[in-house]
Length: 381
Image (tube, rainbow, N blue to C red; front, side):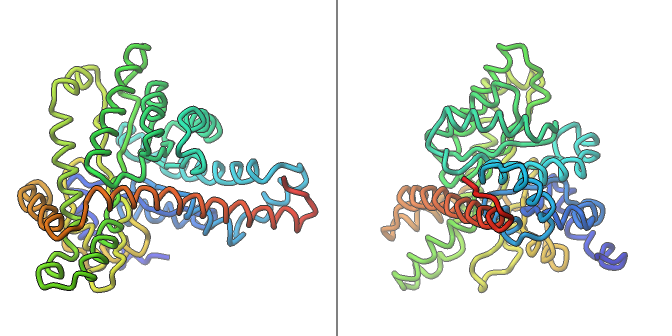
């Protein structure tokens, strides 16, 4: 449990981050975290105003079995399939977390207090199935502060438009490239236009675009290290921040354009950039790097608990660290390209790997639940 002294000490950096217009979301969820009161505690003491989940998070939580025994037993007695069992458990957790965050949702007018749940990653390349899954998840969770996560694959783009057009709030995930990010924003605007044509209240529809950070450095740094020159090594740790900063520039441009002005006049909400994968992968880097250096108004930073604790302890939040750095960001990415490292190849590889990793995590989760159901005397199909 967080003590009063710890809560007071942590308020500094986290409060400064919030004051700069950055919404702090927790990139983790488990039944134990909810039932122990830990999630509510983080909301009360650590400025947490949202939660994101993904297949890997649920695989770690449910795979451990802790807190899920009673529900697993009930599901086993009912003889449900493993897919239904997983959906019942994950949506139950998201529903409970949404209830914890509901006061934040009310106070912020729906801007924060959000909990995200992802469509089955095996559907990432199937538009129609993704839309159907998104509708089903929204129905199952049945909370106004849920966000449905849809991957930013080519098939995901039209799904985003259709789901937003139906009035369902969306967290677009697995964005690595600037080109794909612009396509995501276009899909969101198209969805808002569809919703407006259907007579829906645009002010009730919210969206974030999850732009992944640390994985870009992991891949590009690996290639820079292989080159081994002084010029290459000097560029390590700079590509991910450059990429994210230029994403924010694109956000500013799109949401100041005439297409947006018409929607904004109809009380639509901007699709906020969300910095994802903000835990550093390289221990040589400061553990708050992707928080301290990505401070900009109107953004979300979703952090694993270790990163949240690090920011609370020694984060260095010194105001906006994004909007003045576009020229340097372009120069850094251009320097990487000059060394023969293809930006397009890297981001395409990262998108493919991201989808594949979530598919593996989902299959691991299905396997663990299958074993649990079978152990209780049920032949899970």
